[in-house]
Length: 581
Image (cartoon, rainbow, N blue to C red):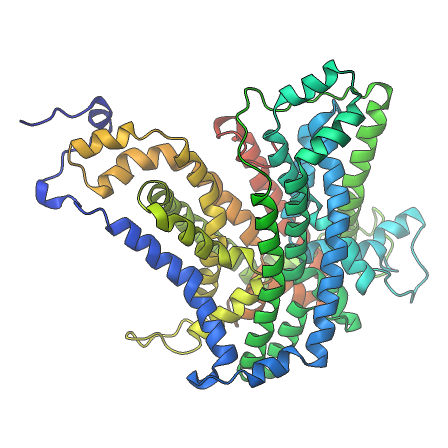
């Protein structure tokens, strides 16, 4: 007896598969997921361990231990802990305050405020550092316009320890805000209503109810900012290298720049040290989250309950002042530097020129190539990962079973650990020709593409996996009864359902990969320069105006993509876009 095709299958046009074409065991997709997890997550870091502790494939940890305990490494480790720890505290204060105010009060303009806050995070760290350098430079066009420019020859106050901490705190504050927004969505409104019935004031509700409930998320947010600070390369590179204030990522960069491939064993040892420091924060964050208790069933999520009254305009003004200090003024200073013909020239209508934009966008081969490469690398990684995420989301939710947790951890490694660690691991993996085929992808675009896919695969999976977890299995069960193959299942049933979430994840990957520097700074070669690499090189060469023009142009691309995503926000699943609170 042949079963009739269900209505869902008739509508999609799936034809029943021949019995011999079906995948009876269902092991193909789990095997593919395990292979990708090993390739992107396990093998690079295994190769890193071997290079550090068994150079020449013979166990000899003495050299690695000597490098890790050297004076330079110890000083860089202390600097890394110092800047990451203090900036995490600053990010927690700034981002936590903004998150609470936007989530529980009736302040106006929440959507644009949240959008601006997240946009400031999507701007590359090196762009943020360059913008603040331009703002406080003695030749700052913006401060000169306001009559507040420092005297010529005055050192830039942001160079060194204090500037790194300040800029990283401001840059990582949105990470804290997004984490706390996620936690606030899980707080039931009934808790607030019960406190209000007892006569509790809004400040009391926040201090005695919300903050204790959010303690796991607060700890996780602080540790997330700490780990981000550990692996940050762009800000310490622009603000620390000029005054020889080295953190672990910049020390690794300097070693490789000075010694080339000969410095790989030392770089591998230092990368393991970075991974160890970051791993401390990751494990602590997981422990804090697990101790947060089980899930709570809620009928209504938390709603704004704090009526600000006469203080409403003041709170809104304070939040917009934060956006101005964090985003507006630095970008205006950067724009002013790009629009003036030379350093020190006053910004007036008569002196206004777009020559630097024309130079970097049209005339300079290296900058034009960098824009093309960044679009190509980020776009290709985004497309491939969005397609891969559909199969991965289905496989992780439906086929992996007890292996799911192990696969999740392995896949998360390249994203959780600092990018410099992944870059060194990729160099070690692909420095020699690949086995069997004898082809090397080192110093080619493919090594950057591989690193992007490994690093951003967890980001691409978040939305599709969340969407897949909410889908009932009756469509799939009906398809199985009709004898469809796994490929037909993915193509006609799973893909149409997950396509919106996968597309959004792909665009989010593009946003973070487009200006990426930490990975590509160690993997680029002549002809494969990215925007982050070119901007850093222009700044080191003293071409601050051209670097500013590149930075502003890159920010315009990010802003355009975010506005496009926001326009599609109503058609997307809830909580996919972090700024739509």
